[in-house]
Image (cartoon, rainbow over all chains, first blue to last red; front, side, top):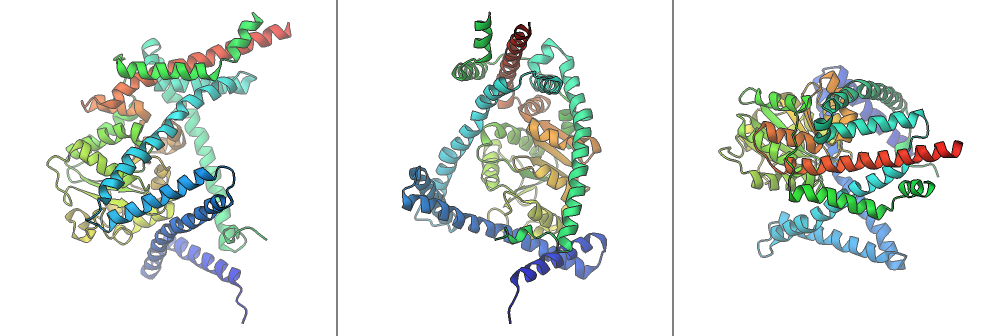
Length: 215
Length: 274
């Protein structure tokens, strides 16, 4: 007997979707408990994603290291750090008393991971200014409006401007609460309609992007 | 003249980097003490939390990454300190892998005072799902105990007095969401009816403006400015107020550079058209 795995996968998705959707509209205890169980599985499946991501990353970077491709040294650092954090984290988790897992984990987190992440984030302060300085030029009416709004919102977020021009706070708040909220509401409604359409296509088995790309 | 305009249009980026470094560092070393008007959304957060009935359950979602600690720590400290001073119950949780470690650092930093673990506050640790935690977040709201059977320290949450009456999102009175992974919108959608307080960057606040206007979001601390205002309101001046001076001067430089670049650009365009 030949099993069509794709059809089974589509069937599972459709059934799962229908149960969770029906639970939203009908208060039936069996439906409710099944839906909660399915949602609980989604959290478990999410945890498995970390494992698949690990395999995928090792595949990509491991290949680079073995082939000595350009920049393989960075891949090697990544793989070494990955396993270091993993082993130290596991030692901490299993409470291996003979080894100072907590101390090493804390040191790696506070002295390597946090400063590296902070440095990456801080670089934005430099790059945003230089990029904006070069790109935000008044070329037409649209770019003029864009620049004016950007400057007004920056003025709202910097209290020094309220000393010079007190209205910048209320102007900024008005921009956020009126034109921006209105525009965002339109986008949200559009996204919601698109999501419903995609959801219906998935439920009737027309949308199968989750099966991967067509070969 | 044309030569000057060209120079103004193409300032070397290293000079801009140097200017930024100076304007950011100087006010931190020598604070200017600039006045700080308190915005409406910050006042709303303060008033909402202050007026929570005793015994209310607050879910504190710490979604900040390890990199966010540098500028997210003042947010965590000021809000964390305020809610631990109030007669409310606090549940710390995170859908970001770095959240529990940051929460531990926070609790060590501010101290827990007279609050008792398990009775007044709990740390549920990390719930898997990152970087797209919406399904986990929805499931967590439906049945907290089955998604998170043990707390961060491995204690069964059924044994914690605080968690005995907290089973679903309906048992939570307010969510405080420290953003980093866009969970604010997920809480609004998946935990409908539970008010959300956001501690978000200005860019994410723009996304959430519609929910704020509609009322699902009851208050927002916008970036470091919001945190500085909150430090002022709670009378706990901290890092954010000092950082606020640096951010103010940084924005002055930012606006000045945009003005210089555009004036030079328009003058050049005008000269070319003549």
